[in-house]
Amino acid sequence: MAGQEGRGGIPDLKHLPTGATRLLLEPELGHPVRIPVHLLRGERPGPRLLITAGVHGAEYASIAAANQLARLDPSQLSGTLAVLPVVNPPSFFARSIYLNPVDGQNLNRMFPGDPSGSFASRLAHWLGGWMSQADAYLDLHGGDLIEQLTPFALYPAGQPASAELAGAFGLPWMLADSGTTMSVAAASRLGLPAVLAEAGGNGLWPEAAVSALYQGTLRVMAKLGMWSGPALAVPTPPRQLSSFAWLRAEAAGFWHPAVQAGDQVEKGQTIGYLTDLLGEPVSQALSPEAGVVLFIVTSLAMNANDPLVGIGTGSR
Image (cartoon, rainbow, N blue to C red; front, top):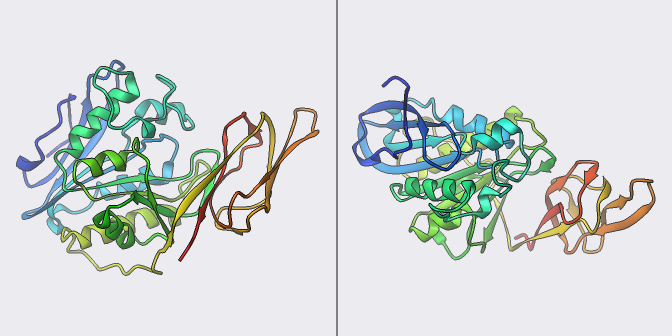
């Protein structure tokens, strides 16, 4: 079916026509947006998989991978694939870091949302309507404009089905998360196995990062019995991490990182230092735990309480 424009109503995923349907939806969120939607239904029955990207609009590898997935051949699918590659258009077009420019909120801290709340809360609630029709959920992410990142997958803690899909995705690291306000937590409360997959960063979408998200999604689809294309083996079994330790800036100033994403660090190791605007030392940033650097901020500019680094600990 050719591309269409429409209002914000969520299509009934159980009764889609076979083939590809492409839409631009305009949900009522208190701020005008047009959200692209790609719906692919195979000729054979199977699960309904929801894929979102662009929750943070400058995580470009996730969006590029979602756009590739939206062009899969429906004849190779069993079931239905719903792909929303840019769910946060205001953030995408503003090249906004972390926060939504409409209301200053981080969309991935607003789930399950509120239909009467601010823009990001309404958008989270609208996305929950998509989740309610799905059998599984993948949320594609990456390092933001100022973040260097090594690929990893998060899944809701205590959810074996989600952990199984995270393992099938095949990124180098995987980590259970106990947060309650992220997209995958909202999906898990609806009974869906859910994975948040991260690759890329620094405003770039290199082929390796896009491919990691694209191929990981195909592996999950094969696991779900949805994909009849070429089998893709997991390159190396993911290593399980036990916790995610974040370190934030004590003050504003100039940030000088001393490690890179993917580095192994020891507890107490210097991972960078802050100076004031005259170049005088303000503080050293010391690793709170031993582990692997999953992301590190690369921006020279630093605000007080901004994230500096995220370290995955307890690998096995």
